[in-house]
Length: 493
Ligand code: BG6
Figure 1: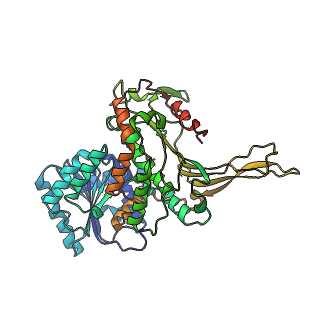
Figure 2: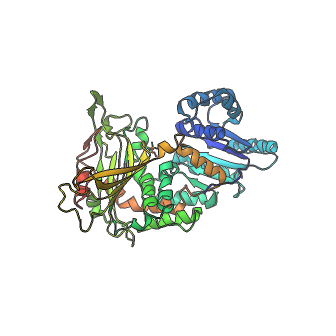
Figure 3: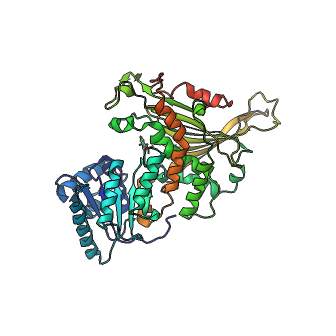
């Protein structure tokens, strides 16, 4: 991973620099890296936009947004230093001459650095532009040095397995695999990275991390927000594509992977692909047994009327898009034989809470079988957000004259250790500047992850769910989701 490497002068080119992601995540991340002294000594951010604009106006716009979205306070001193690195560049995505002008601009920066700098192209634009941009980058030789030039691609990476394969081969015409950084921002989250440290930095958990001791694993990513302004995008996407194919499967990989031999990016990514390959594929007639979908309907939350999904902007009145998805996965390998991995995610749920639950098996025989208190099996909860902690639940003696038991909890609070936790994008952008691919998705990972969800995706697309809307905004999802786990004698935690 990214320890102790020296950053080379870099020119960062942001396609879609006037968009939402750039103002909320990218510029704040670069700004915070800058304050922390983690940007290269020589760097420039070239912000591409279609409209005419000046550096000054664009910088002011960025400053206003930093005030809302930056983790660290915007001080006049830091801002004065940072803003000088931002250049606005008017650019038309489909005009070759625009790329030639950009090439000239980058060469001008190189002349000032005194070397051919690294180039980092950030594609913060809709997926339908990737092909145009990638082709122009090739014909104008903007990324001509595979050792120095990199491209970052935002999700969604394709909309199914076939389109992901096509996108991969299209990118391969311009870039080598080592130049391509496919972002899944969940991998940049501190608490998700901590799964690696927790599992492989301790000797006491790994021996228990297998089917012999673990009964089930649950991964929940519940969101309180709805589709907000992204109705048109979401209507074509749905929870399975938007969250499970990427974020939840990546978390599952971190929980389930075999110990990597080293922290080399290739090694870690290989182990994750192994997990994806081992996930049992199901047939179309098994979809209802393994997966549940939902769509939120209108509701009243704290006295306020809340719209249902079908009433949101850009959504069809009879939409078949799922805003909630839950799936039971099995991994056909030695470690996880017969252990269900339940994953669920949804919009407009009761609260924002992402967490992993490792449910250990009950004791085979209890010395305390006469105790008036039921024994709870041990459980490990890894809270990803907004809480960032790890909780181990176990039984302990109730203080007193009798030998009664009660459940207790041991908590490691990530927040308490380090309040100033970097944002996922800071980690990921720093890694991209350093040329560290560990936290990015390799082509085979993306394709395999699509393969895992294909059957469910096709079944849901081709069969309208007549029960939609089937959960109320502000609830924990459709009722059917309970049956998914109860069939195995389990409960959602
Ligand atoms: C994005 C999805 O990838 O992740 C969004 O497209 C979702 O729909 C978001 O809201 C959740 O990210 P986070 O970091 O807020 O949990």
